[in-house]
Image (cartoon, rainbow, N blue to C red):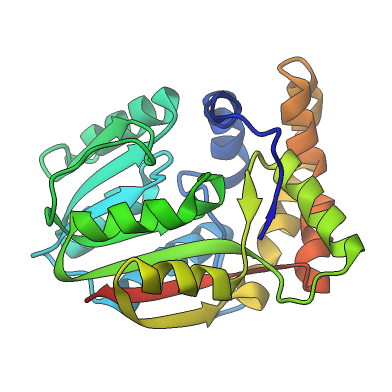
Length: 278
């Protein structure tokens, strides 16, 4: 695992409070990667395909109660509730995202099946065995104690409950000094306390009581995401607006090229982990 000690929780919250309009402008209601299994897909269709593919892998049904950790603007929860009929409880660190997600669910007539809460996923207390599915897309990178989070998450799931997470992984070992420095810079730019390898995630999940862990490498299928974002930044001139908001937002936008290079070089990987509670 490669980590940095300078990322504070308030910085993560502040990033999403301020950056949510940028995410919406540049990338739409789903603030996660697209999954291009079909090259003709639009970015929005590719994002929906990621959500649908992950849901297919664990078999989300109308009977499920799903906990969406790092729900963002509610894109995944709203789509799952609408398409699959399940009930969803979304958790986001950002009060701005919570309000945005709540209004979006209301406008789509899904307030009865989708609930959003602004809370710290590492501190929140939830009823044991109250969920059938734990869902998290591009959020665990922002957690400080990932091993402890998965131990808590296991308690929230009913027996035989399922876990589905999508992660920016640190590339496989061994690590060169150059890789460590490049990945540490990405931690800083994208307000992530650490990036970990697939094997480290497997170890944490196993220790937390999960089994049947499968890894799905989507690095190549998701790589177009940041190139499209970079082009949209160029066309919209949004970087100039970011300069009026904060230096951190500018660093985030200027990190797109470095993230593209990291995925192409293998410094970083992208994919899903599926598991079941013992």
